Length: 177
Image (cartoon, rainbow, N blue to C red; front, side):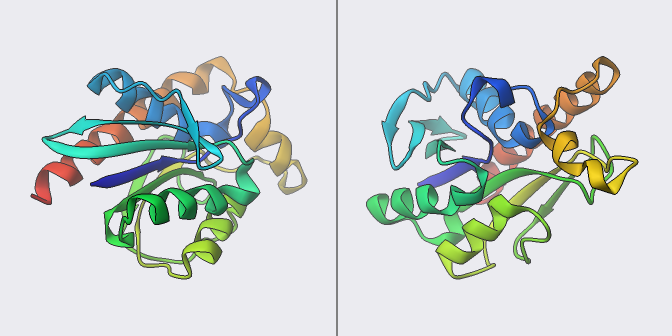
């Protein structure tokens, strides 16, 4: 069983921001595979279903980004899922806008959600899919950049990236069995 987590912020005002690329990817997977992510438990919205013949849990922590790990560890403990069967999807300013990167391990970088995940799981040995959102021109503006509205010309680039991230999840699951 795989636990697939998209990081984001729960409020409607954040729903179409760069910081919610993880949630957007979970939404694509949910739609593609007919999984309803509406159950409430583990400080999250979640749903169970099948992707590439494997049972999965799609999880969207509702804790705010900085406490994402609290939600993930609860779900992992409840379902007894080992870290090698989790995939965390999130936005990354250090990657070119619209690119995705897959890593099997590594530090959290400057991402507060990932700092919480690494702290809670007490390991950096888990798969993550990072969706590049690029950097703001002005470094002082990074908070507004990640939680502000995305300009129209950028929306398409990031939408394609979340679709690629969703395909990557399917491929990873397919290749692992």
